[in-house]
Image (cartoon, helix red, strand yellow):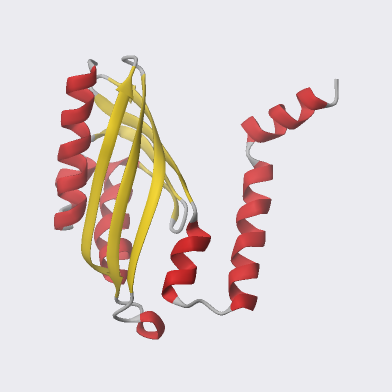
Length: 162
C-alpha cells in the first residue's frame, strides 16, 4: 500500500466514523481485524467493529469529527496523527464538547486495516467532560495496569533488566 492509498483509506474510515455508518467503517478493516479502542475495549471482526461504532460510540457522542494528518506507511504498517471532537450524550456529561489528539497505528493487509490501536490522552478528554477526580484516578489506574499487561510492554520492561 502506498502512502496515497493509505491516506485514502484513512479518509474513507474517518468519514464513515463521522457519519456513524458502521458497515462502511467496518469495510475499511479485514474480516478478522481487531480494533483496540481505549474506552470501549477490543473489538474483533467487522460485525463487532460496526457495533462498537454505531451502538457504543454514536450512542455516547454527537457532532463527531475525526481527521487524520501526516499519514506515513511502509506498505504493511501505517501511522497518523489525529484530531477528533464530539459532544457528549452521556447523561451526566450531556452537552460538553471534547477535543482529543492522538496517534494511531495501523497494521495493514490486502489494502485494509488488520489491527488498529491508538495512543490518546484520555485524561484530557475526561477533564473536559468534568469527570470527578476520584473516578478519573480509578480510570487512569486501570489504564496504567492495562498498559503494563500488554505483551510488548512486558517484553520492553524485561529488556531493561538484562
